[in-house]
Structure formats: structure tokens, C-alpha cells
Image (cartoon, rainbow, N blue to C red):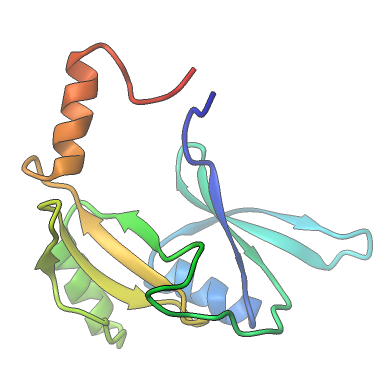
Length: 149
């Protein structure tokens, strides 16, 4: 039934500020925009990988409740090929990460930042020793691609 993760939708307080962050800081490219009948931007799609996008919606008004025990969406995780280089690049741009680069319990290398609205973003490198890479290898060896029909 499920083939993959298509997109994550984020309502932003300031669309231009969020676009600057996701494009200039994280390096994502704008794919396209959906507009209302009056021409106002309704959604901006940012390209991550084939079939994977972040949707940015304008005009957010209320701050979300945050906390480690909150039910619901916790964070976005974006994969990088070189977590150390990503960390250096972002800190050179003036981004102050929430953490340094660490090895997580699943043996992946990661660090955390926040977007302009305070949404937590994990940047992760999946080395061959990571549990995620090991699971992908097991699915590939069994002839499964990890996707549901």
C-alpha cells in the first residue's frame, strides 16, 4: 500500500524567511508553487529527491505546543552524505546547531538544528554500520525493497 514518503508539510510564520532557510541554508531547490484563484501563493514545494518534497504553507498564526512528551510529529530528518561537512557548512553560515555531531543509538552520525519557526531538523549520515543501512541491506538481500505493495 505505501510506496514511500512523498512530502512533509510545514505551515510557516514568514514564508520568505522559511524559503531563504530551506533554499540558502539547507540547499533545497524550489520545485513549483500552487496558487489560489487570486494569485497568492498557497504552497511552495521544495525538492529533496525524486518524489520527495517539503511543502511550505504561508500565514501560520499560532505557535505549536512543543516538548519531548508531545504527541504527534516530533521532527524532520534529512539525510546527508557527509554529516561533518554539513555541520561545518551550516555553522559557517551562522547557524547555531542544537547539538554537535554525535553517533546515535542506531549508529548513524547526526546533529540537530531548527528552522526559522523552531521546527527541529535532524541531519543524518547513514554509514554502512548504521542500523538503517543494515535494515536496507537485509531487505535488498531478501528481494524486498522495504516498500509495501
